[in-house]
Image (cartoon, rainbow, N blue to C red; front, side, top):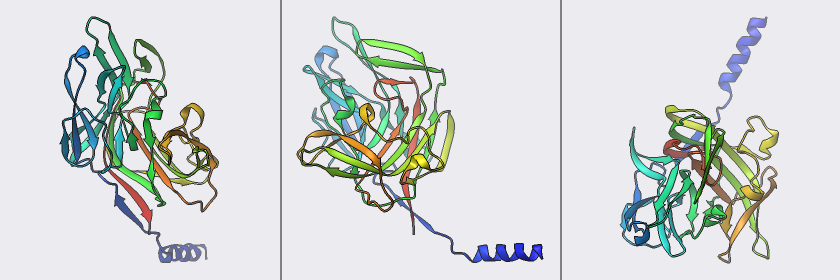
Length: 317
């Protein structure tokens, strides 16, 4: 009798409908297309022409000017800065040949310059890709996230983020904090991070941006690996803190960890994540961030490198 019951249960399972999934590519998510920007740095730091890369349409720009981001959803930690009249660049994201064509390489390194007749200035920069805009030119190191317009309008409800990636972490157990003339080392780890946040945003009468967290997908990579193909990062809807799989990096972004966006009046404002969205709350914006480290501005593990390719979103049929 028991065998008959088991057989019937197995037969019933085969007759139940399987929830099909479909996968959609993300704009420029195969990293086969890049905009090349040639920026000439100031003579006082050498006057070298540096190359900055943007994930976007194939074109070359030979001007010291802010990038418009009109034809791409991707920004990065590559920076065009003009501080006290001095033009400087930082390059931490570059195209590189991967298993199926071009991919993106993100690296944590020092952005340094030697001022003629003065000491060398060094700032630690972590390689990062994100959806949104870099608000150029950068004019200082205070509140670095305020120079980024995080997120894009987005109303869909994906079940997962899918990508190919490879990591190389020195695993020295040491972190470096580097801002202008000061550098220090201290113990710690710095995993690479892949994060997709779905938000419901609204703007109040004073132009402040309020948000509820609709969906959360976070993966941290804490050791070196070869290429991982079709890596799936599931989206947790609702209160992620009350569900299985909740971990580091999934918490609401508040206070010093708040991201920024440009409001309808053209002003930079912190995105105030005020809670977890109730079931059925519509999504209005998405933030995708892929970084070679997760310790915040000017702090990380030197040499951390993350390669990413073939970014896609999975949806239930």
